[in-house]
Length: 522
Image (cartoon, rainbow, N blue to C red; front, side):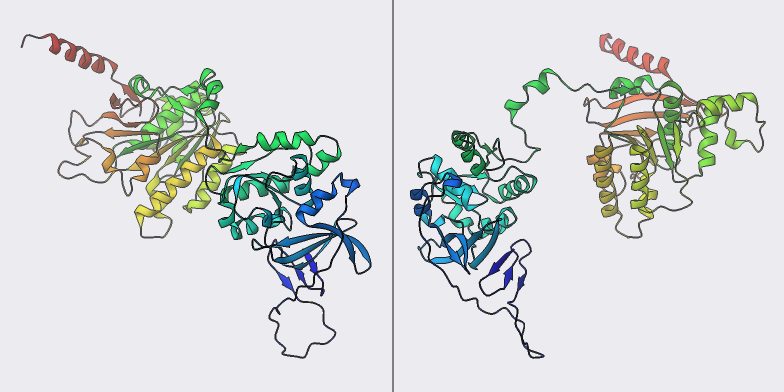
């Protein structure tokens, strides 16, 4: 904030103006900002030994020493590109400042009206003089009139003039405010022109006072072109490529699926899709059971179409090879306790007791809690259509897009593996309940599901065929990891035990038959 000669103030961070105090103001008098009258004072040019600044440097930029209100002060004169004085900034002992006029130009800007090759911008006038002096007062150097907080405002106003330079080097203070302002300003400059200089001390003036002026020049020449953190030059990839990130994959309980997908990885969304009643939920439960009984991973299970009791019984039942939820009564035996202990009671399973609440943001916050607070590595969300149905908006396509985008961001943030269940649209002609082939185009509501999933696996089963109704085929529709797609495996469902058993022999025979056919003379 600056205090003007008449006592009015101006905050250049928030652009708030406060009028000069008045001994009397009639009721109802207007409060609009009056036109400010600029009053400039005259000082003398002289060296500033305590800053190691020479008189010729001060004279070049119009930096004087004088008095204001009986107090000794520095006077920084501001001019527009036509050489007309537009403002004065007064620096008093203790880093107190006042202004006359509006320093919305750079200090020193009038010296280089036509632009040039390099321009250095500093935070304050003393820094500007320091940088110029160590370079023989030859290079274009300017400073902000009101510090780092005014940087973006001044840059925007003077963008046309800045575009006359090939390079704009931001040499702001090496503190949090200065570094933040430099990045903010670099965003505004034309692409490739903005550079950020790094200093070994707080600012150029400190370096000059320490007798390290040559390091100012070095910082100027070594300034790096600013680019967003997520834009990486290929020349910087050597170490990453020679020390590649290892991907920890956890096998699925199905051999054929592992052959195509290389397993389940954290940081990925795996979407299982099928028509209604094909068996998506059962496949997910078998996978969850496999993770609980063969790995040390923590699993989160969010089944929105059933109670947590039903989910728990299913997982215990898979371990016991019984469909417990179909039994009206069953004996709680030692076998049950052992099965419970190795699955639901393993201290590695967490379920969401949603009580019918399906608010999307609430659900996402629960997933975040599972991942960050409970260290859950794999989360099953069954299913997406239920999530968007609780959002209350009729545009299903937009709701699915928004939800998938949020889930994608959440997976990236928490580095979990998300197993997602989604319905398919009914195809023309033969339906999914009759074994119709699945495809990405059938994903319900939006292309966002396919685009934002890393893996999409379709389930195909002919419910109406007496011989085939217990056989489910898994088809990989999308595979971002390896690119391999197609039929992965065939699973036989045992109605007595609830288990899904992979028909490896049939898969092998099919492969053998194909090879034999290729060699056949017929």
